[in-house]
Length: 269
Image (cartoon, rainbow, N blue to C red; front, side, top):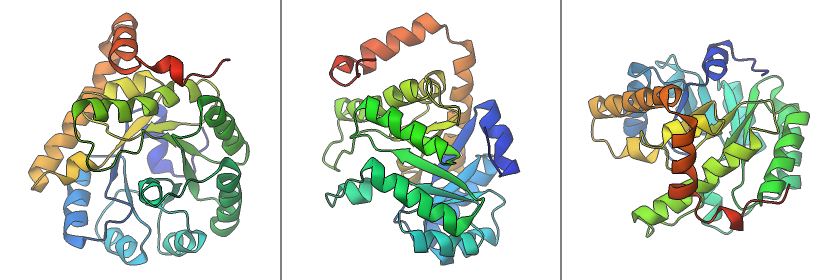
């Protein structure tokens, strides 16, 4: 593991990272302030925010948590790093999926190289796109590691707002866990699991090889800071369960509850 951010190094080493995502498009100062304060009080690991210099400056004025900005625009990334952003993430692609934009592995590699030239030694996280098959995801992960990416994140299926039933939720979450499970076997850099993470499923992520999780939509649904803090603490406590769960029990959950269709997506290795 090669993280330049000392504040985050221990959390990733201990595999108990909680990234609180305020939203790649969210510029609602009031909501961002509440989420940031809740994340601080609950002792989350860091914040993932919109690539907006005003938001970076605002959060830096009071929050002690490291700030990660998410974008695929090198100029926005450079400007936010200049304002004090601690990490950079190429990810949170839902905005682009909704507009029919799907980045190729070669495009992502080129973007990373360009961004690294602009920001120097700032840590970089890249989300591995869900729509690549597993062999392509693994290959991309290895290539990203080889060019100096510090962290990787997996994601679930992109579901539009009309897909709110439980089966759609689970089907969206499963690929993220599956990708984490396989990619973690082929790279030495930390992985985060995102997309639909809750207190129920967060132990599964760490079991599958993740160093932590990213949480977002569930927090935004809370009406006040106290409820947000309680939710983040619930997530933290549930992640500790992983240390006490027998492997056989987890395997049963993974392959019966989540991966009924795993044979459709697992590559031959």
